[in-house]
Every structure is written in C-alpha cells, then in structure tokens.
Amino acid sequence: MLYVGGKWVEEGEAAVHPEDRGYNFGDGIYEVVRIYKGKMYQWDAHLTRLYRSAREIKMELPWSAEELSTLAHQLMEKNNITENDDATLYLQVSRGVSPRVHDIPAESKPVIMGFARHKARPLADMKKGQSAQLIEDIRWLRCDIKTLNLLGAVLVKQYAKDKGAQDSILHRDGIVTECSSANLFAVKNGALYTHPADHLILNGITRKVVIDLAKENGITVNEEAFTTDFLKQADEVFLTSTTAEIMPLVSVDGQPVGEGTVGPVSLKLQELFEQHIN
Ligand code: PDD
Image (cartoon, rainbow, N blue to C red; front, side, top):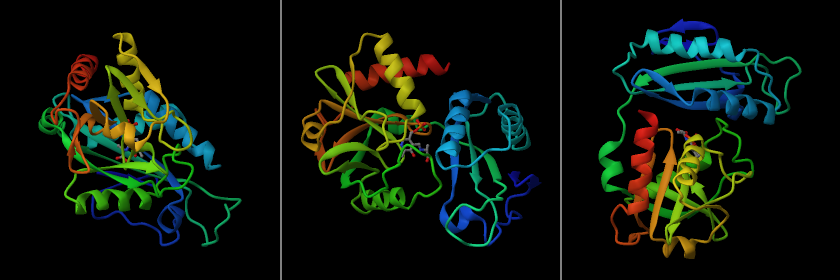
C-alpha cells in the first residue's frame, strides 16, 4: 500500500497529476529511512532533515512531527513490516499541483507520498567491499538539500556502472565531495577524513553516527576537504548511507585501495555500528 496525497492506494493505482511540481520540476524533497527489525532507525534525525529541506526550498510542511510519525507507522503496518523485518521507508513531498510556471505559486498545497518495502541489509558487500569510479561532481551547489531533483546523481551513478564499478566518487576540481547517494570517508594513518557538512554534500545521518562512534572510540575525525590524490594514497576508503551502512570501497578507478581488502578501521566501525543498531 502507498500513501499518496491523503489517500491509501495499491501499487499500480497511484496517479501523478501532470502538473505536479515534483513531476515537472523535481520541486520537492524526500527521505529514505531504515527499518531494522520492525523499528525505524534515526527517525527523529530524518524528520529534522525533512523539515530543514522544506525550509531551504521555501516550502511549508502542513504536517506535524506527530502526524508524520503516525503515517510512517501506518506505512509499516499496511505493508506487513513486523518485528522480524528489515525494510526501508520512503517519504517524499512535492510542492504540489499548479499551472506550470517556474516561480513558487502563492497558493500551493504540498503533496506527500510514502511507501515501505522489505529490504535486506547489504551484508555480503559490506564484508568484501565494492569498487568505485572517480568523476567530476556535476550536481548543483545546494547538495545539502535532499531534493527530488536527482538527475546529477543518476548520471554519475550510471557512469560508474558503465565502467563496471558499483559507485562513483565525486570531486569538484580535484576536491572530493561525496558519492552519488552516500557520504565518503578516507582513512589515513588510523584517522578519518571526510568533507565538511556544507552546501557541497548532503549531511548524512549515517555519516553523523559514524563520526560520533569513531570519536567515542578514540578514532580521530577530520571534517576537512581532501584531494583525489590524497584519496588515492588512502589506507582505506568507505561510503556511508542509510541503505549501504558502512560500505568499504576496495578499489578506485581500477586500482586497489591500500591492500585492496576491507581494512581494520572500516571493520572496527562496522562492528561498532552493529552494536549500535542492536
Ligand atoms: N541517499 N549523500 C547523498 C547525495 C545521498 O543521497 C545520501 C542518502 C547520503 C547519505 O545520507 P544518509 O546517511 O542520511 O542516508 C549522502 C539515500 C539513501 C537515497 O537517496 O537513496
């Protein structure tokens, strides 16, 4: 079951209005939430980010945090997600329906849509690592907003796929930002390096959890920009996201990272994350 603009509908029955601004302009925002064993993980942080994204695009959400929490729980229930299940919950809000003009209509009523799906954790890949390809970051300059407008991400991800890699690592003029749908960390001499949470990256919720876990466990974290050359000399590289968790990248541009296997710092953080979500 999906929730679309105030109605519960079966998949396949949902319809998008031809002049929904989310559909016409990518004018809207979204969140992807992890469900571990039937419980939403970091729900409050996702809600906070959804409200922030709305503010940043000058959209007022007409729903309270409580109403959105109720909706999220209903989505789980109606999709038979129970205490044994790992799943994801998707929520998006478009600015709504109005005649197609670019500026923001004075009267616009946001349209919310949500669904929840069973989804296993990527445990096998987390164990063996994935490969990535470097590519210029072609996205806009407000990557801090979790907008529906994801064409930049689509194209850089496809570039990686075409090269036989699983993900892309983005850089702006040689400064590494993040991945197409995840944050990026490099490990050098036991310390973590990741781009600061400014307008060039999405301030990932998993990123924050990993930074906190690292600091609590005596691992130095440097939230500072670094170059593609630094990345290529890194001992370990991994990406973080709601769905990928802590995913080691063992090869970049066809070259092994460090030993070309999952390194000790990545392993340690995966262990800490496992304890943290259980
Ligand atoms: N992507 N950076 C980008 C560009 C992202 O799209 C995401 C999330 C992240 C990681 O954020 P978080 O840890 O809060 O999931 C970083 C989601 C999962 C997606 O679009 O599917």
